[in-house]
Amino acid sequence: MEAILADIAVSMSEFKKNPAAVLREAKSRPVAVLNHNRAAFYMVEPRVFEAMMEELADQDLYRKAVSRLANKAKAVEVDLDEL
Figure 1 (spheres, rainbow, N blue to C red):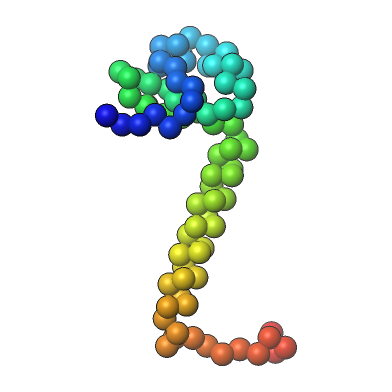
Figure 2 (figure 1 turned 180 degrees about the horizontal axis):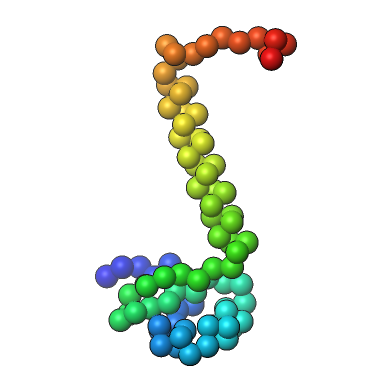
């Protein structure tokens, strides 16, 4: 059984009837929309989605930095005053 990663869940039928009402009743919280009792998708406000995308980008950048730090043989020395 897969986890539902939201405190609020509605059926697909309920969502189709009135998506605006579901959004309003959620009061800025994520909503899991279920199809046959499984999460079909999650509805989140734009600011939450933007924060999630920023976090993923930060994690990707962190992984790249760690990877590059581990490979010091390819390091290039620079003088900050020359930049």
